Image 1: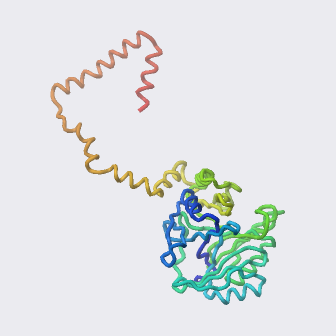
Image 2: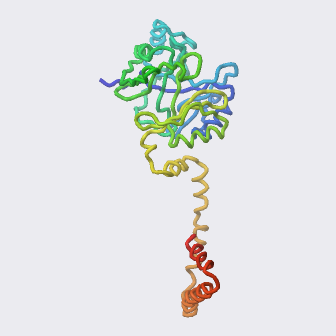
Length: 337
């Protein structure tokens, strides 16, 4: 039976950063997110995709810059209690937010930080991710993927959907809920960044290569990729200017687009360009090109127009006699438009 509750869904993402304003500027340029203040607390600046808010910045100058993913639960206190029994550590105890439910932050038995959140209202319907939303979550852990999965499955009811043998690198385990894939887990070894285990969120973009170029231009760092992965998707792993690790994800359907289509489709996402185009298309300006149509055709103009081709033919004939090179150049110039 399908679970229609919020349990096990990735519901929110916080960026721990020393520079909140700089982070909003960076992700605005590279992902296209807008900055939006939370009405309950205006100092809490959120990231908003076209579908609405999906995360926020938490400015901490003495903390390690990182993304913190929150996973939904119907009972925060019970989930925290179960997590500690399984070896997790509580970083921030269960706390109630005004009109925004209850949350807590934990560290799993292998060092990966994550949050849990319970909302007082009904969860919004699950739907396929759109551009700018987190579309995949990956756990790079210091233990076997099966062991790490057992911890999270106990808390959130996740299902093991598949597993890929990566040879010496171990198993890549796919997990999800209600038959829908949510992400993967693997023993990072030398593949991931050093230190404790960690979660990384993948943001769906229209063009991975273009996003990587934008990240580099905005002083971010490419850590791995871009690369194609099984199933036809394309990914790249990156770090923002302050060192927070994130990744971008391009679905196979976008990878298969004809060359140039993805880039053209990405342009409308920039709000300034449509506004300028609309301004140029005012009735007054659109009327200007119509002026030549006001001139009536007379015998004189028809006669004059009829003479032009003959005159051009005569010029070509003269030019042909002078030199063969010039006749070769003239057709090239006419073909240019």
